[in-house]
Image (cartoon, rainbow, N blue to C red):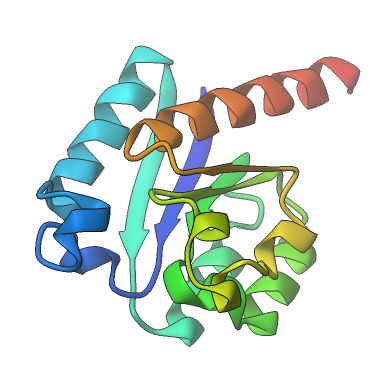
Length: 150
């Protein structure tokens, strides 16, 4: 069974409270339930983690090495600032999809650059929680393609 680590970053635990005009009223707990249900339908094993601390996110990525087949990540604001997260993703060399609930390209100019996109093979943005399902599908396809080539 494919194993994917889902990492959510800074302020994602505040879903349902923060900027509800952008993120809606669903909570982080609702998001995790949505991801787990989607993974179960796809016969994917997922682990969902969340942290506001950059170093912890880097630690999650490091621990994914040889334990997971891929990473689905929404680093929140760290997307636009963290070389450390980019370097960690490169170090573990796992297929990675970046996901965002909103579309950073339609928001403030400082949100339009993503360090994670320098490594991730795909980015899903602006599709709400559904973007996580799309990310799981992309990862599953990439991982199966990789396993087929081995």
